[in-house]
Length: 162
Image 1 (cartoon, rainbow, N blue to C red):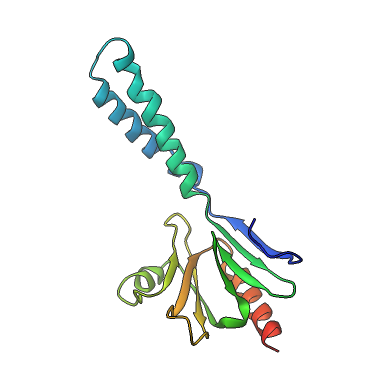
Image 2 (tube, one colour):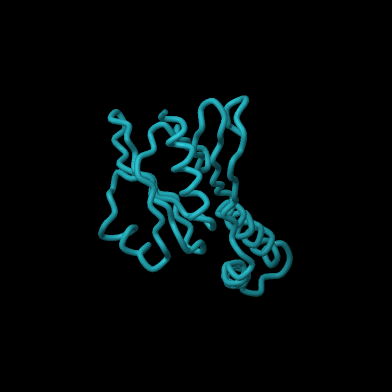
C-alpha cells in the first residue's frame, strides 16, 4: 500500500458491497444483455452477456475497494482509498448515525468537504481539519466501526499534537 515506511496499521477495514447488493445489478446487466441480444444467432447472441455481466461484476468489485485505515508510528495518518490526512491536523471528531447521515450529506454539507460515502454502510464519521492551508473544512466517510475509529483518531491525534 501507500503507507509510509515504519508505520503500523491501527485500524483497517474494507467497505465491500454486501451479498444483498449484488443480485439487482447482476439482474440489470442480464436484462440489458438480453435486450441487446434480441434473439440474434451466433456471436451477436452471446456477446452482450460476455461483455455486460463481467462489466457489472467489475463495477461492483470496484465499489467495494474503498478502504479506511488509520496508521500509527512516527507520523500517524488517516487513509481513505489513496487520500491521506496526517493526524496532527485532526480537530473534532464526530460520529454521525445513519438517521442523521442524510442531513450531514444533504443540506448541512459543505461543498468543499472530502466525502467517501458508501450507502450500504450505515454510520459516518466527520473529522474537522485544523490545517489553515487546507481549504477542505472536514472529511466525512463511511465506516462500519465508527466509535472505534473516532476513539482511535482522537487518541492518536492528541498523542501526535503533544
